Amino acid sequence: MAKTYDEAVTECKLAFADSAPAWPSPLIRFLDEPPDSHRVFAWVISCTRRLLDLLEESTPELERQLALFRSYVDESPNVEVIQDTLERLWVQRSPYESAKTAITKLFAALINYRERYEYRHLSCTASITVLVDTAVDREQAFLIVLREFASFVSDEELP
Image (tube, rainbow, N blue to C red; front, side, top):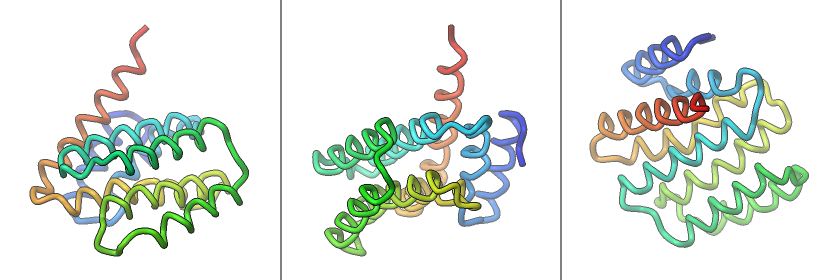
């Protein structure tokens, strides 16, 4: 497990180069030390928004879904409420709509995180990996993820 910022970024770069399916997980683990769902999902939401912008897939509907997701992170509703929302959103999307799929996977990740699922960090990567895999230029999308991570971490350290 990565302990420092540099170790997390290096591990992430190596995993991406190896086409590991959950390559952002070192970044998620770094943000989750000590455990902090607000910190983890604040970055995941921010990163997801940036990738949606890159893909020109941001829509008012997806923004509403991200706002709802953020409210679930902040307000901590019970898992059944999140599960109901996940199921409703899952059936409303087409399997060809990567952006909607990515947002829906956020709700599943939150359930896994709340239930302390052993591989919760892996599920937290799904929205990011779906969007990066959709990009015409995966390398450019990957660099956006790393820049968003660097910006998020540096903003936290400001007084």
